[in-house]
Picture (cartoon, rainbow, N blue to C red):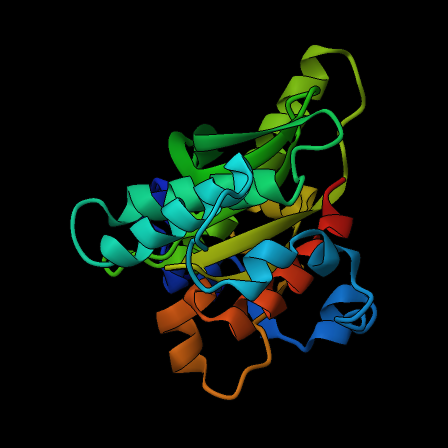
Length: 263
């Protein structure tokens, strides 16, 4: 692929072609490989015990519940209601921001933002990247990137482009402060299909960022790890997502374990 042409594109235009030209591959692995250990026993998993109302009621139960739990059910309902149409991206984005806050992804001293826009240099030109939801710390570091999966775009390449831009942004900010740049960083990422997440660990190095900036094929390969929940029917998982209580429990467990990568 050394002689293949790469051109400057915003993240919304990235496809599998850009990944191939940049020597980026995606490797699907199981949960123990991805997380470093097996998931906890559901009977003792603290994240499941802390959210028993959400994990024992498919929809908003009768009677009073906490404001946070009520928001979860309302936003989840909107994801199903606007599954197809002009409000799809908005509904999923709002649900994801609500979910991350509910599971304390904004602690300690972090913030969940919607519609994060960054720029980076690609093939000598400045291009824009957009993430639907991000988690950031007080030093403007991106700790998590989330991309909504839409029919007219390729979410995985978009997510990876946003990770490269986040790396570029972080090092540029460090240079402005007179700090040494970071040689490499692994960005946790999520692609959200409706209310069904797929998880990623995206390594970004100086060599990869330089290859994007110069429009050159990097000799060093980049391997992105991908985790999809182990379910009997992947099509059903992607269609129903957290509308299903069984899916919801598994997703909450994975989100609880995934927090270890925010750093």
